[in-house]
Amino acid sequence: MPQRSLSHSRLSVPCSTRSSSAVGGKGEDSTVTMELITRRPLTLDLVNLRTGSGSGSGSSKGEVAAEITMPALGSPTLFKLRDRTLLTEEKRRLCGWALGIALFGIFLMILQTELCWFVCGKGSTSVFVVRLLISLSTVCLLGLLVAFHYKDIRVFMIDHSVEDWRIALTARRVLSISLELGVCALHPLPWVWLPGSWEDGEGVRRGADRNSTLPPPLACSLAAWELLPCFVMFLRLYLVHRALLLHSKTLLSASYRSIGSLNNIDFQFRFVLKVLMNTHPGRTLLAFIICFWLTASWLLTLCERQSEASVGRMEDTMWLIAITFLTIGYGDITPQTTCGKTVCLLTGVMGVGCTAMLVAVVAKNLSLSKAEKHVHQFMMDIKHTKKIRSAAANVLRECWLLHRSGRDSGENRRNQRRLLEAIRVFRKARLKQRKLRDHANEMVDLSKLQVMMCDLNGNWSSSYKALEQRIGSMEQKMDELSRAFQKTSQLISRAVQHRARDNSVA
Image (cartoon, rainbow, N blue to C red; front, side, top):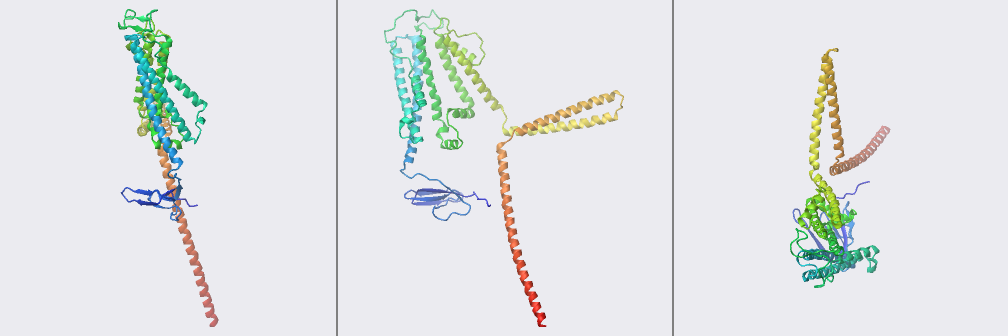
C-alpha cells in the first residue's frame, strides 16, 4: 500500500470570507490576507501559502487537509472567550491588590506592637489609630477576596457552560472561601483599649529596671489572647503563592497552556514552584530563607518579651533562629516561653527541609552535563584500555620469565608470585572497564536515540520507495518483454506460413 506524503499540509477553514490573497516569495515575508464578509470554506496551504475554495478540486495528490471550524463573528463562543480573558486579567489585578493590602496590614500590626512595647503603651491614641487602620485594611482585604472569588466563579461558569452560579458553589469551595475569609478577618481590634481606658495595674507596665536590654520608655506586656491575632495575621502570606501563580509566565503564555493541556499538566503552584527551582534555584531559596528568618525572629522576640528572663532584643533572636535553622544549637540562648519554643521547633523543621533542597541544588549544579559525561566516559575508557593492555603484557612477561626459571629455585617462586600479582591486576582492570561500560549503557541519551531512530526510519522509507520504483521498472520491462515475445511469435508464425505456402506452390 503506498504511503501518503506529509510534505504538504492544507488547512481547510470554514469561515466568513469574501476574498483572499496570498503573497509569498523566496527570501521575503509571506502574508495571507482575508476579508471576512461572507461565509464559505477557505483552504490555506501552510507550506506554499496558496489559497482556494474548499469545494474545488484543486488539492494535489498526497496532501492532507485538516479542517478546523472557527467561530463566526458575533458568535457566543467568541464573547465567552473574551469574557474569560477579561475575568482572568481582573483576577490577576485583584490578587495583586489583595497581597499588597495584606502586607500593609502586617506592617501596621508590627508597628502597633512596637509602639505598644517601646513608646506609649497599649492605651495610647497612636496605638488606637494604628489598630483602626489595621481594621480598615482588613475590611478592604475581605472585599478584594470576595470580588476575587466572584470572578473565579464566573470563570468556572464559562469553562463548564453553566448558567446558574449556585452550581459552582460546591461544599469544598464554600468551606475554602469561609476558611480564607475567617483567617483574613482575624486582627487586633481597635476597641479593646480605647484611649484612656487602660490603667496601670497588676504589674503590666514595665520600666527599664526589669530588663536592661529594654529602653527607658514605657513597655507593656501582651496576654496570650492578645498575641494570637498578631500571629494569625502572618497567615495572610498564603496570598503570595496565588500571586506567583497568576503572575507567572506559565499561566500568561498561551503556548504553555496549549502544550500543557495536550500533555495533561495541571498548572498549579506546585508546577510554578518547580519551574522556579529549576530556573532560579539560588534566588528562590535565598528569598524564602531571608523572609522566613526575619519573620521567625520577630515572632520569637514577641513571644520572649512576655517572660521574666526574656531575650528582649531582635539581634539575639536572629542569632537563635539562625543557629536553630542550621541545626547547630549552641545553647547559649534558649527560649523560655511555650510560644518561643514552638517557633524554634518550626524553625528547625524548616531548616532541615531547606538544607535538603540546598544540597539538591548544589549537587545539580556540580553534576556534569551530558557532553561532559560523554567526554569523561570516553577518556576513562581509553585509560582502562591502556591499563588492560599493560597488565596483559605484564602477564605474558611473567609467564615467559617463569618458563625460563628453574623449578626448584627461589627465582621460580618469585616469578610465580609476580605472575599471580600480574593476573590479579589484569582481572581488576577488566572488572573496572566492565563496570564503566555498564554505567555508560545506563547513560542513554534519549534525544540522540530519537534522532537515530528517525534517521533509521527515514532510511527505511527511502529504501522502500527505491524498492517500489525498481519493482515498478521491472514490471514495465516484463511487460515490454512479453509484448516483444508476442510480436516475435507472430513474426515466426507468419514466416512459417509463408515458407509453407512457397513450398506448396513449388
